[in-house]
Image 1 (cartoon, helix red, strand yellow):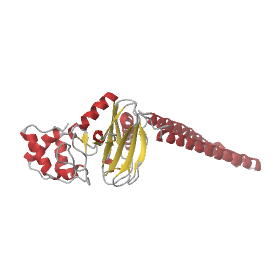
Image 2 (cartoon, protein in one colour):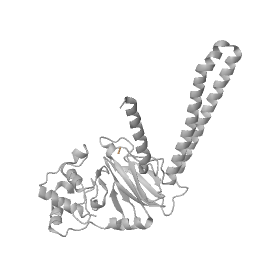
Image 3 (cartoon, helix red, strand yellow):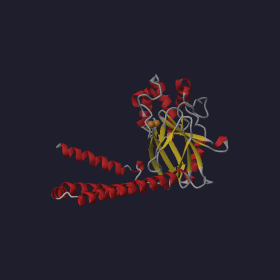
Length: 337
Ligand code: CUA
C-alpha cells in the first residue's frame, strides 16, 4: 500500500468511527442543550466554509487574472478601488465575527440556566477525583440520599441540576450528546443542567487534563424512563446482599480483613471508608476503573491484584491474596448486585 493509500485508509476509519460512535458525539444530540450546541456548530461550520471558499477564490483570482491586470495598469483609480475592497472585506469579517460571538453567547446562556429552577428538578452532586467520578443524589430525606461511582443514572424528560465539585485538581464534566463541558474546581461549586430526551446510554469523558490517567477518567450516563429510574433508585438504596454460602461468606471475611476497607465502603457491613468508590452494588456496574475496564471476573481479579498494571498511577494499591482467598473475594463481589 502506498503512503497516500494508507493515509486515506486512516482518515476514512477515523471519519467512520467518529460518525458511528453516536452515544459519544456532540453531533447526535439527545437533549435540548446538546441540540443548541449542534445547531451552533453547523451555523459556524457553514459560515466558515463559505468564507473559506470565498477567500481561496479571491486568492486564486488575485494570483491569476488580478496580477496580470495589476501589471498592465497601476494607476490611482485602481489603488483606491483596491483600498475600498479591502475595507469592505474587513467590515464584513468583523460583522461575521461579532455575529458568531453573539450566537455563541446566546447558546451558552440558554444552556446554563432555565428561566427559573423547575419544580421537578433533580439535584445530583458530581465529584471529580483522580481518576473517577462520584455522584451523590441529594434528597431532603437524608436516608434516601444515595451515591454511585462512574455511572450517572437519570430519568428522561426531567431537568437535572449537576453540582460539580472536585476533591483534588481541576476536572471537567463532559457528556457530548447531552451538554457542553463544565469545569470541576476544588473548593468551588459549578453547576450544569442536563435533560435527556430519550432513554439510552451516553458516554462521557473528563475534558480537562488532570494527571496521568486523565484519559481513563470516563463516565456513563444511563437515562431511564421515569418508572425504570424509580426502580433503579429503590434498588440502589438497599444495603448490600448478605452472603449465604460458605465461599461468599469467606469472601466477605477476606474483604473486611484486607486493606480494601481502608478506602471502600459496602453498606450493610463494617466497611465505610469514602476514599474510593462505594462497592455496595459493584456487580451491577458495566465497567470498573472509571469505566475503562469491563466488569468481568478476569478483569476484576487483575484489578484487585495489580490495578497499576491496568491503570498506572491509580490510587488502588496492589493486593497479595492467595488463589483461594481471591476466588472467594470474587465470588462475594459478584453477588453484590
Ligand atoms: Cu479528570 Cu481529566
